[in-house]
Length: 160
Picture 1 (cartoon, rainbow, N blue to C red):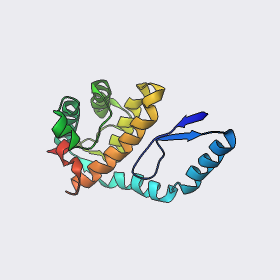
Picture 2: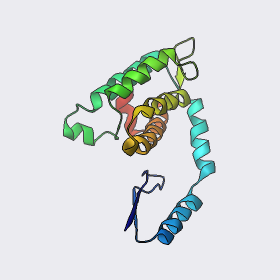
Picture 3: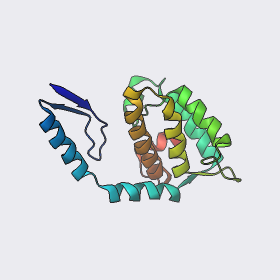
């Protein structure tokens, strides 16, 4: 049996694919590619530029994100998953000030496109077996923060 692991999301990405032949693998990969909604994905990514965090909100987000892994099980189950660790958040916090391409602006604000890029940049240090899942989690997390800024999301915990 041939096994292929891919990312999973609420937007239809496949978590794990089991096939019995290379032809079946090829057919399933083709199906995934054909079902990918590139235009919708691009719109969601462009929308990240329309939402910003103040320095206070960014600090709140990073602080709450660092608390996430230490929450009691019951509370953690009520909050959307965040698969990044303290090392990642150290990098994200450092790059908020120092990254030449994606850091805060002169007023301390940062748009969510830049936040997303800080997450994916910090994820570059991940092992290959978690890299894709964390990149997907970074995308979903930033989409949730976009909604939370508008007052419409389970992700409000990270900004409160």
